[in-house]
Length: 104
Image (cartoon, rainbow, N blue to C red; front, side, top):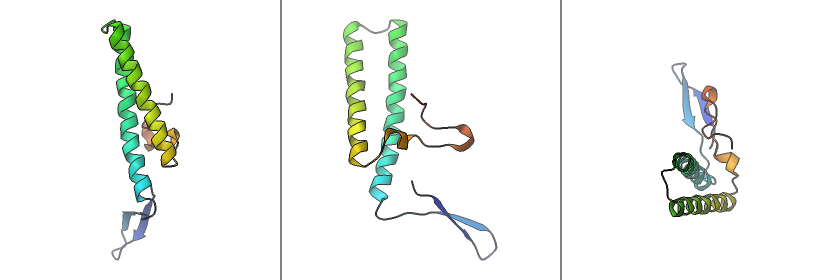
């Protein structure tokens, strides 16, 4: 995403405005969408692993969930390549909170 543009206002205060570039709007939007999808994918994966560990799933359900998550991960990588992004680009820095996505 683009950085914030800071400017001094007439009253001496600091105004923050998102600095956007029309050339990169589509890529930045795709980066945001893919970040949200990756977050959800990782949450689904953790839930699936937990259910497997608890013995809540039949073998065919485990296989179907595993295949679905694998396909989703492959599609995510394809979209990243299409928009010249890496999976690391999707991991937003939340400052003192750390990164949005856990490091795998």
